[in-house]
Length: 465
Image (cartoon, rainbow, N blue to C red; front, side):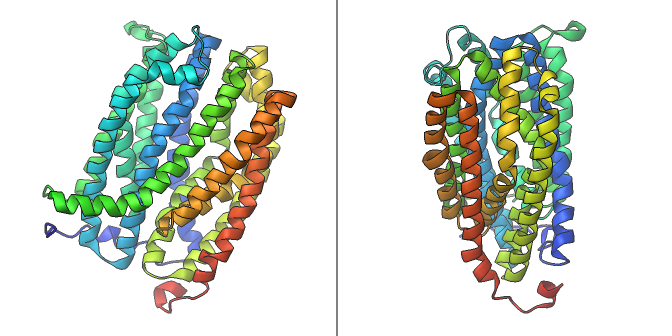
């Protein structure tokens, strides 16, 4: 029998099931824009300072990118699973269930971290050799990842914790936490990478250490908020039976979501190996362009993160009309934002790349990417929003199918062909085609499934509001 606990704060009880849909989404997304920007900003600062060390060091960080993203996707998947069940429990009004899911999502995250840290430390050399890292780059990769793996607990647990906070409809607090972490990382980067103000010059090891320290702050902050502000953590340690059934419900959505999220960086790893054939400058250019792309897609990523809690709470409350309207408005925004970003990057791509590296070959590769791929940013945003919505409904299968189609059916085969025929620009064209085709499919799928369900509204004052 699950332990009895005090109910969570009333602030977390269905705050997203009332009010105008557009205004509610705006209030959710705006703080997330800043939070996502903060995380991207410290990645860009990392790239800037590492880029000053040399092309080999920048290439080494680019090689670590798919692996770091893969493990980050594990954390994201667990967070998606936790957010989905927590948001639906809030929408249903089952607040004791909210506490049980929140507490056990953190114990699940900690268990996963231990397993992956051990595995990661044992496979650094063979894994990165398989990705194409040569003997000139591998020592730098080793320096970075040995520290990063030990700090993985500070990445995974707070990501899951912040997802739980967002599930309650509170996107401001996670954004503040992410901003604090980014600020700490930005301050520590020059101190630890370049050895400023009497600190030792650690180069790539310093970049990893700065990330670990800043993430440790997010761990403490997210736990304090969950326990004392939102009152979403149980004061009693859950028994084993309760833990298992909570883990099962979380993993029902979390495992497919994690698998779907991990497919993308794994595919990027394959693409990185294709680019490695064209030299370290091609890999470094791809790494720079990917970070600029993250900045360009900041609003879309924030919207995708916000749509999950909104859809989850309203789906749990059976307010299907609100779900339908939220997706329609989100898709219109994604297409508009994508067109604007494609136009801007068409003009300023080369100038942005010059901020990170002055190698002519790196500049040429990164500029090519930022001229080609942004054409598909609108449909790439639709894919992100649709995947987040399906996961929030407790339907993770469409999300993973869309990801498999995008990466394994289209992107990788076309990238291989493009690499053989025209070089790096062919790889970037493959990304463009994959985003366009799967984005159109994602739009059609949501219309056929969740839009049809949403056409059967539940009559209530909250739903009409």
